[in-house]
Length: 564
Image 1 (cartoon, rainbow, N blue to C red):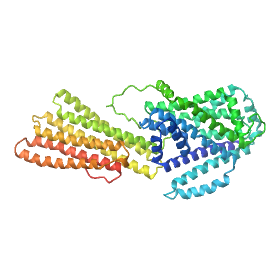
Image 2: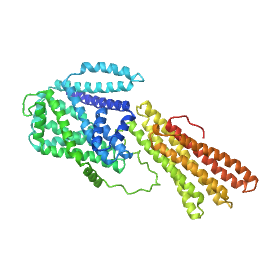
Image 3: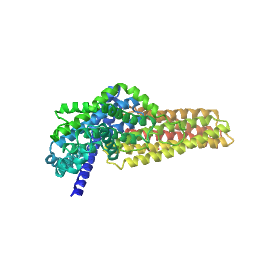
Image 4: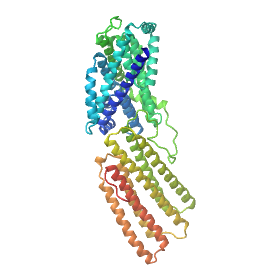
């Protein structure tokens, strides 16, 4: 019989974790890009950052999602470290809502309510328009159903009269600080293993409300959960940049500092919280409703007080984490490496992964324009050693371009395996198209460099007018690349794409003009047919490059692709 009860508890916890995951992801999908926009913009000072963290965490019902999102934003350069710290502080307050929801689940039996919720949820899931509402109902129904199962299992086990458990917990002196530290450590380790503070909170509520676990020890477990839950953000930051790892460390320091000062005032603080709930911690009378409320109230009071104290010391927190985590030694910018993706993706939602991929594509496009600047420089380089060195540099960039396309495409392919919203699916399709076109821009740059190299190895050179025309064509092409990068770094609803199309028309018209003039110049023996061919190869490649740029712009804007 005991083995079945064990499996029932484990299964209930699995349902709880799954329900919270489904509910959180559904809320994030319903909020969509607006949630990311709020997190990225409503952080002008520490107080708006705090409120933003609270709002987002209450909205998605997951402090882990908020902290991972915040670390990702810092990694992508969208948030400063100080802004991230204030958001994480707010997330710690926002997550206390979960404890209140769980105390509600232990206080009332929602079993009769969850089955209609399952029915409505499954019906909505199969409707295209309301499927995320269906996911949310399914998630919250699973959550309350699992809490009801845990409460029922606790009653079936009659924990309050289980001599072995009672003897075990009574062997610890609840009025001893060493015992409190032991349970604090246990709570930290279990939360790190489970990767869910909600699961351990549910177990704690079940044990406390059955009278087996003294409230002081239950609260020690809750304090451990606050430290253990920071492991999520630190794991997410393992493969991230320096600032993101600092943000994750700040989260850990914030919670550890809070636990330290609470330990100094442990018994008076807990007794005060119990007074608010009208519960006597020394009482031998078991009141399941009040015990679960005490845990939720402590969780809220602890995080609010901790935030109120530490929000004034964000600059000092920033200095400390910067001292602990030094920036990595500068790596050669021409070595292939992805800056924003490819690291640890634990608990990242597809929406977050898409955001990081967008930043990587932006970097990809910037590198491609830098490659084109080397091509422009190559045309004017006459020294053989300098020419060879610059040409090798362009070859290296072409190899980087190929690798970046493959790695970003792999990353997006992995993201597309998840359950995605229609908006996210469309973004991934557009991004795959973007990286293909940006890689083609890199190929065009390399083709131009090869033509210039072929010309340099021959006995003939371009005449002065050809150089002037090529410089003019290069200037137009560089303008188109600049506009593309401006477009990739901004919000598409605030962009004027007409500038890009106007530049492309100028490139096309100039190509046609130079093509006609080239025929006349060859006929007039201004230069040989061979040098005229290389000259037009460069001009035509610039025109192709302009077409690839427009394809990137159209992919970003969500319009139809044209042939290059």
